[in-house]
Structures are given as C-alpha cells and as structure tokens.
Length: 112
Length: 114
Image 1 (cartoon, chains in turn purple, green):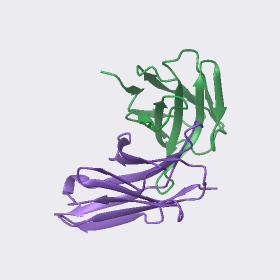
Image 2: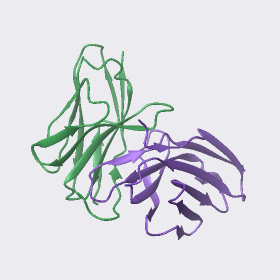
Image 3: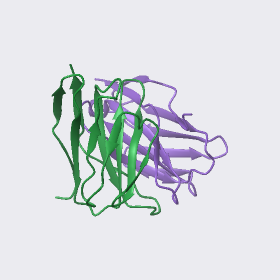
C-alpha cells in the first residue's frame, strides 16, 4: 500500500509563476519529509526537507509546507525557472526507522 | 569527493542471464538501499541493509539478491527469476536512524534485457 502519494503525475507552469507540487501521506508516524528533484537518467538529488515539528521551511525559491492534521505537504517554487523542469519526488521517513518512503513523482515542466 | 558510485551507467543483458549492478559509497553510511524506478511507479524499494552482513527485503525483492560484505559496497544481482528486469536502478545510502537526515543517491544504472 502506497504510504506516500503524489496524485498529479504532471504539472506545467509558465516561467516566473509559482509551481505548487502536492503530496499526501497516510502514516501518522512519519516525522521527517523530503523533496527530491530528478532529471532523466540521473539519480535524485535532495532539494529541501521539513521536520514534523515545523509547518514551513524555506530555502531560496523553494518552500515546503506541512499540514499534519491533513497529512499533506506541498512544495512551492517561486519564481519557476526552465531549469526547474524535472520530476519531483516526495519522501517521508520515521526518524527512528530505517526506510524512506517515496511517492510516484510529479513531472514539472516550466515553459519559457 | 564523497558520494555514491554506481556502475555501469548502461547495461545490456540477454534474457535468462544474471547480472550484477555495483554500488560503492565513501560517505561512511551504515544504511544502503536499492530502488527500482519504472515510469509512473516512482521509486520502489528492492532491498536495504543497515549493517555489514545483514539486509532486508523491500517491497519488490523477488528475483533479486544482494550482499553486504563491506560497509562501502552493496551490489545487487538481478537474476533470471526477475520477470521484468528492464528498469532504471538506483542505489542510495544514509546515516542510520539519525534525526532529520536524507538519503544520498547514485547516478543510477539503466538495465536493458533483450
């Protein structure tokens, strides 16, 4: 059973506008959440994360929001740039555990 | 430079042959993982290891085998029992059970079975 879900397989956004990628999870024990960016034929690279004790974490153009009551997190990219075009994976883990659980990914296309 | 190295980047094998994918890390991480990526299915866990000489099955372990004889190395063998071996394989590592740490990935191996 998929514990981390990304229900939007793809998203297209104009350059300069905001990109919002969404992720839902089912396991209330998750206490650390991550976003990875992946280009074709390459390994995912870590982008940004958030601990369950926070509801927002910001790093430059990237902000992750966590709504624990809704078991939902989102990644905001502002402003979007063509180089942001990639597949974005949401992931979650229990800090005392040993596995990362990944969503199915959202393919973002930023149109120049 | 610390990191994870997967080799080869591209691999072609005939159906029915076993093939081994290499994964080496110099990050001194205890935990290592193998994932498979297929279109529309995200990253699915094949095997993971927390310590030398110990490993656990993930969600899709059937048709695969691993070994962990050294902390730095976690090779994956795709056996002839794997029904659909053509895929993109990713190796990762992380600090074990540490708070708020991420997994680091290699560049992947694209396996094509013909």
